[in-house]
Amino acid sequence: MRILQLVHAPRLSGAEVLVKGLAIHHQRGGHEVCMTSLLPQQTDFADIRAELQAAGVTCMFPEVRYGRVGKLLHLYRVVRRFRPDFIVAHATLAAMYVRLLPVHTPIAWVMHSGVNDFENGALKRAERLLSRRAQAIIGVSQQNIDDYLREIGRHPSMVVIPNGVDASQFAEYGDAPAPALQVPAKQIVQLGRYMDCKSQLHTVRAFERVLQTEPAARLLLCGVVEDVGYHAAVVSLVEQLGLQDKVQVCGPRSDVAAILRSSRVFAMPSRFEAQSIGFLEALASGIPVVANRIASFGFATAFGSVSLVDTADPDAYGSALLHALDMPRADRQLSGYTLHDTADRYMTIARKFVQPLQVSA
Image 1: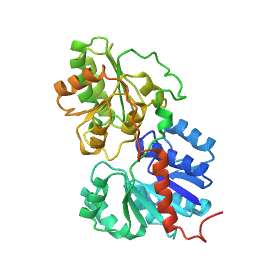
Image 2: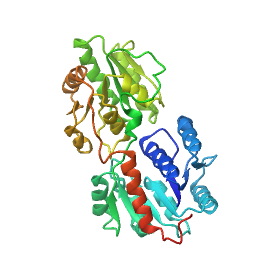
Image 3: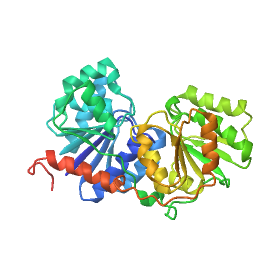
Image 4: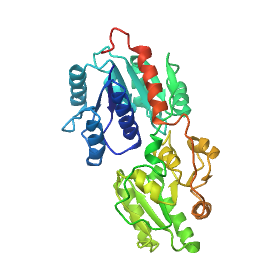
């Protein structure tokens, strides 16, 4: 089968990391896979692109930033050139653009957003017009499906497919290289884009409380700078609290597995998430986890060394981080949340809608 994976922008982010895993898994399974996008590749995606190409996955990203018509023409050229049997569109805008094309290829739309995109009236109206152009609507969480039912209505094929990770890459004794930096013995790490919903400011305030009891603790913040103003606010707070020697505010990192293996606690204070890849990676690594008490993290309470607290409360959050520094690493079996599980579910959807005569040999 020839599968086209479409994302909004090739960048170091959860949805794109998932797509990389799916593409490589399906390519190794004997299928032909291509990844494309609406926007040009960002610099932090270089390592992921190298992985894709090494696995034989075709990458067809635009070289320039097109306007609306240009995006459509780019997608049309990709479809004509690659001739996919099945298209998987990740995120709202990507799914809307591809469904405007004059093609008959079956399309599945994957809803990754942790918020209800249809609160935007224009997006709601567009989706009502384009809804049946998708053969399947996939939510990474039940909340995605519930939002769709409430705002748009029922679709003939709706399914929840949780994200999955390659747990072997994050196991405590895996093959990941050591981090480039020397890791303090009691390092707390938060990985994620710098934007308000990721709540790095909450982590810095809570970490100040940690230091009052454990002065040897250190905090590492890593992620893509999506909101420049928010990133500046994080740096400013670190300086205001006099924590420059205790907190590193870094950009994106590609050695996530090694960082998780070397650190003592993983912090995840997001105000909302659909189904976070970063959270799953932390669970797979065995590192003690302190996360916000939100619905999408609730399943993790069944695992050892996981604490869900109100991370907007710096005292409660700080206390949980401090306690987690003394927690053991946990052996967590992520049944249903592995990359193999997720890839198989996507292939089941593809085979349902691709007619036998259309499937490439």
